Length: 296
Image (tube, rainbow, N blue to C red; front, side, top):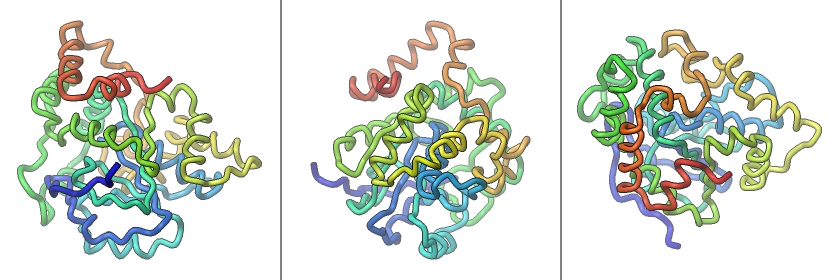
């Protein structure tokens, strides 16, 4: 399979994909990719625990920056990342064709049913404070419309997100499909939120094998414990951007429920079918099945 090529830039209230044009890859870089709200912080925590051998209190948000988030600007972010001396593990929410893809790096993509993504997105958006809106809307470099405050109910939010292709964030289906299409590349690994929920220790070992990072068995219990939802919730300040200052309720609200299926209690059969029809139309059949169920 040929390596993916960058074919476009992606810029909006959140993104500045041009940062990847100026990024110098190292041979052991790790890129953690998701659409968003699919387990990104969880996988960052897992990787940090493997790289730092179960160390407690790691400032994961600082160690693993969201590269294509446009604040702070790339003129600030690139030198900071270049100065890192540990094995770098970086975060992106871009589709493959808006990213500079390197055969040097290892890429981990995390998928999650879009309905679960929306429920988590709504909490993320509805609890954002004025500081969050100012950073995204009022700082230099924003392209396009500002991000506005969310609608009143999660059900309405769901319908707008589905009917308007990821509104008010960014397109969902193309993001998932673009990573699914390159899953056979030797430096790409796909994870699924449901698989992590079902067998987190097994998935952590799978990540370690992919990253070629030996597991110190004497630290294994610490590694697993530090990746549990309860531990991450209790120690959220270290894992969340700016310690959670962008959200009412702080970092513990950012790491909110960690559950799947909350939409089942709200959506009727017709609304559920609507999502499944979109998935069948926008994704290949194998990709849609994986996104809905994971691999277990």
